[in-house]
Image (cartoon, rainbow, N blue to C red; front, side):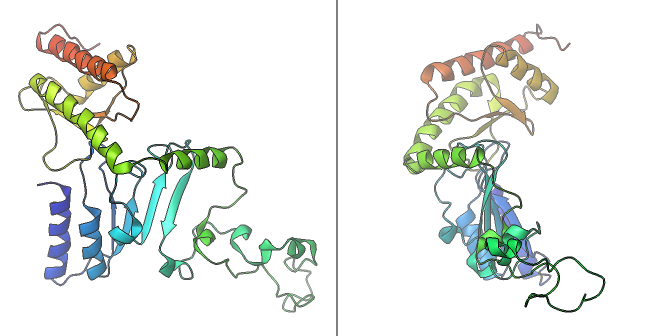
Length: 293
């Protein structure tokens, strides 16, 4: 089981019944709540076969998981916030757009910096052809057509946001990308999976399990199994997270799971503290000593 099979079944069903209602598919490689893995290569090929636009949100895996090259997954668009595995600051995202759309798609953000005319400082310095003078509205001034120039610049940059680029964020993003480019991503994924496998193995005796199906190695979603599901409610899980946070042990609750995401500098001592912290909190709950306030 898993997300990949369910998605493929849905795409096949749409194709087989002739409805062809699916125009676009937007997916992550790793589910944000628990790290469930989606095979983008297989799904991308299927989307290409059926002329379905394929958009990838790579925020949860770009920079730390392989099998994400745009040529391999046949995506039309790939976007990622840089604040996670690309080691950048909050407030900026990066996006790839397939070249076939560069001269076709209209940007959502309409501004002068995406227009050819405004790439030349002389245009702004010249005669104002934008303002209506009440007389010659339909004529050209010095060879210029009236109104704002419409011709876009070439390439995906036409879809950039407007305004000047942040001089603080962009150098930070660049440094993060430089570091990511030094990583052996498959090896990183292997190392992180060994950490999350260990955490899963050691917490399974506490009644914690994972979603069926394949998962990535860098995100782990620990869910209460049937034996403790009634006790370990989302509200209770949030209280546990707050208790552990005071001990400088950091995790989150997402979609009914403890979301755990180690990184390459995570130590064995930190893993031990996490497991022991969860054990202490859950045992208190099972013993009846844990009270919600």
